[in-house]
Image (cartoon, rainbow, N blue to C red; front, side, top):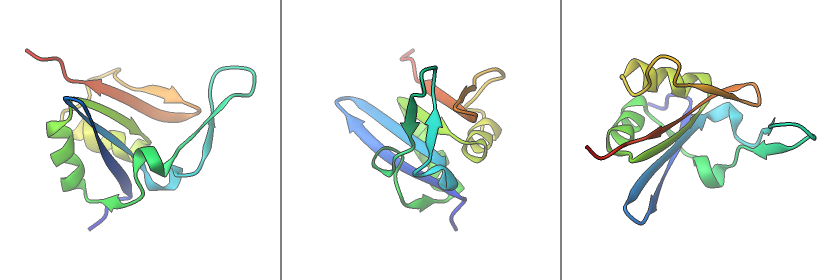
Length: 104
């Protein structure tokens, strides 16, 4: 069952990068900074296939880097303990978080 989230896994050298966003954000242009700049929420980066909550959590458990966009995906990550208090920012009016796993 899909959870209203799209996800893509990128493997870059030793990194396991998870990009996920709320499905309705795909294709939107979000304003960033000043001077009318925008960033497009692209399926090429975030994926186009809806995934289940379980698939997203499986990927987040293995991620060395995660880029998460949207209230739904951030709630899933937060409820699973992947985001601490104050770990989110705002990207063009949309909740956003980046997670970096530090080797320990």
